[in-house]
Image 1 (tube, rainbow, N blue to C red):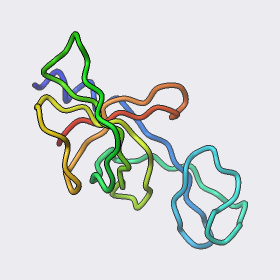
Image 2 (image 1 turned 45 degrees about the vertical axis):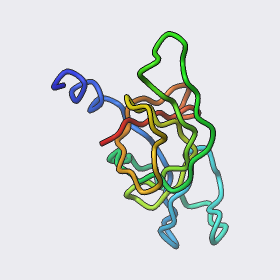
Image 3 (image 1 turned 45 degrees about the horizontal axis):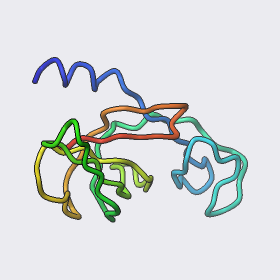
Image 4 (image 1 turned 180 degrees about the vertical axis):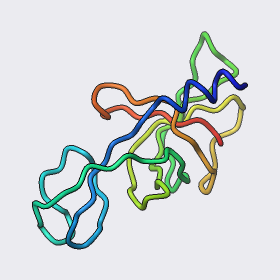
Length: 116
C-alpha cells in the first residue's frame, strides 16, 4: 500500500486559474470560461476530489475484480473534469465517493482516479 501512495504522490494534474475572477479551468483553455480574461495562472491540483456524475462501467476480461467507470470528478480546487475511476469492487462507484489522483496520461487528456 505504501508503494502505491508513493507512486501516486509523483502524479500532478495541472489546471489554470483566472487571476481576475479566480475561476479554475482546464489547463488547455486560453480564456476564462466565466469572465473571458486571458490572464490565467498555472496551478497544480492536490489530486483529491469527489465523484459528481457517473457514466458507463467497463469490466476487463483479464482483471475481473476491477471496474473502470467514466465519471465527472470535482476536484477540491473547484474544477470539474471528466475522468476514469478504477475500483477493486464489484459494485458501481456511487456519486459522492472520495477519490484521489492515480495517473495523468497524454498531457492531462486522460485522467485516472482511485478510491481514496
